[in-house]
Image 1: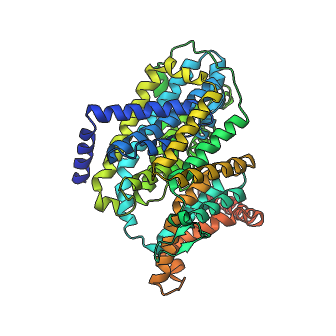
Image 2: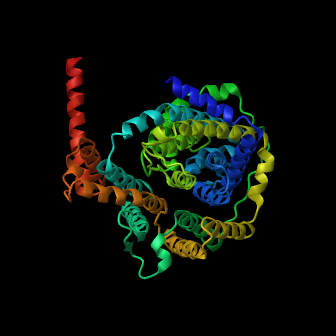
Image 3: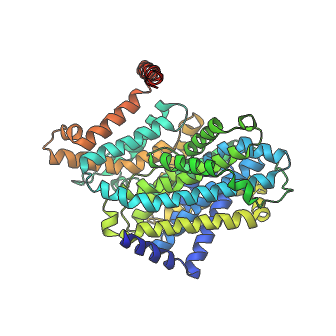
Length: 511
């Protein structure tokens, strides 16, 4: 306990210098600018910045990436409010009430409320990050190869079932990511797999070029193929929120913050799930339900608090278990590995101070979005007027340079282009990219854990099901997949309904 407080204090002090403050503010500002532009994502921003910060010291590079992560999701609320186009998928829940307020001439008020919700949600998540990560890492020390196999498989299963409208497409993309992760020499005996005689494939598909291709080049092709121009709502009123107006929604902030963190802990559940679940919970408990969708402050506050609090929630399993909670946290995890920090159960043993550095970084990002969100409103809106036909070629150039810069191999550029073109056509058919990314990131862990487990058990698969934690994870994973079989789903609903009616019939009789 005391060691943790000491590490936390040292972490905050280590970032109170001009260089770190400049990196943090710059990363947050870059993230906000990217988030303001519809079509660009937090994954794209982090992937591009990872390639540009590869030569920086570890703490400075991770600081820039975390601040850009937070900034991008916050910046997406601007276009949601003023254009009715979510800057990122996580801001879709903010469109209904945010844009409705803007059409009533209260765009400034909506931005102020969104900024307040984002600040409170991220701050709530930071407190959970500081409190839960060390504890979860200690619990994870009891995990072995058998447990990590099921944890990785559970992550891919969750991403397939909760991202997009078609679970089958999600699972197919997760399996595709797992397959791509197997290309190259396997981890135990260095045997070539799926290389087809191509020498360059022996090293596998590098993670950063794959991510830049799937979210960068594919995004460029998607936007240029279907450019949509929307009319920008003019900003006439003040963005500074009234303290009383924010304080009266403290229940919404706490409830949405908790929902965002809990959804963030689930592997594969994106930030948009935290926003929509928080929005639904607010609508179910509010006294002004008729205002939702027509300019509800409660609804906008819930959506922005839920999606922003999920960011620290996604970072918690990434640090403690080495399992990313979302596509942006997967890129962040890859960046940590590139800089010599191996997230997972041993992180609190090998680098115990790093977790508290991440807490300090996220705190700086939270303060940065508050400063930029309230005092640089009108200059930041200029980015919304940039034509996409001008912006997309610049992003393509950065994606190409970024894919090449990580290992200085032209082959990585070819991989980026191939994956980007494939992702473009898959997205047009409704296949989500987040499961592909999570499958790609978790593929190495799943493969190594399966092979190590089989070596330890002399080829027996029984320990994968008989060990206590494995049994729980296996049951949850299999049950999650069975829920998407219509007959099984109806059976579960019928059983739950019968149990609920039985409980309701017994409780009054006892009273």
